[in-house]
Image 1 (tube, rainbow, N blue to C red):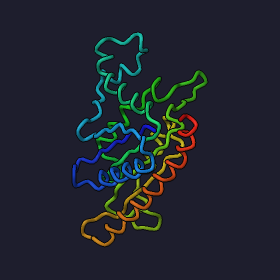
Image 2 (spheres, rainbow, N blue to C red):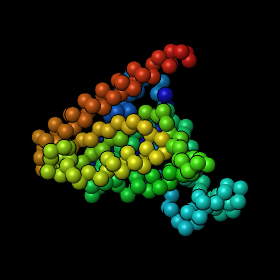
Image 3 (cartoon, rainbow, N blue to C red):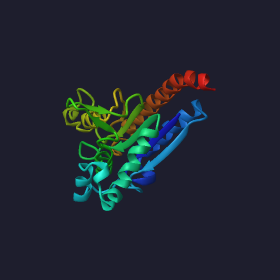
Amino acid sequence: MKLLHVDSSPKGATSSSRTLSRFFVDQLRSNLPLLTVDYLDLAAEPAPEISELFTRATYMPAEDRTDAMRAVLAPSDALCQRLLAADALLFAMPMHNWTMPAAFKAFIDAIVRGSLTYEATDDGRFLGQLGGRKTLFLTTRGVDLRAGAPFAGMDMLTPSLRTAFGFIGVEEPQFVDAQPLQFARELERADALRCARRELTAIAESWADEVRPALSRTG
């Protein structure tokens, strides 16, 4: 199994989403020793800027693109290929102002690409190309946004992720949301992190259980 692991927090070593994503990868590797990981840190390697030339190039047939257009699309092309080459996807991020960090939004803008991560059909449909990949979104939130909580209606992150990745073929993503993680509420924070680790351990075991039969057939 090949996992694409994407971190997007700007906080570095103090990031809870990074800590939890590493925990998940360790759990998955302990269940699947032959796991390979393609790691992308969007804080260190930001997605390409969506410039006027980039936009024009994406709407231009590939054979008609200029050298400058091909050059400006090259980083986005590479990101799309990394997605398509993976068997499973892990996206870890903090919630910023009720939605995703700017670095991750730029990543989405770079990977939603016609003829790469989705295809337009002659009858007007759009077919995402990432179907069949196990996908986990790991998010960290300062406040509690679960149903019944005071801020429950302010979660714009979950529907945005479902919509963007659903368009490119991710059918049944899993979510682990560590919440609430306010430093001022130490006991609640510790409990939220424990709950997230339990969920991540269970998902890692579930993924491994599904993958092992295929590995035994190919082995």
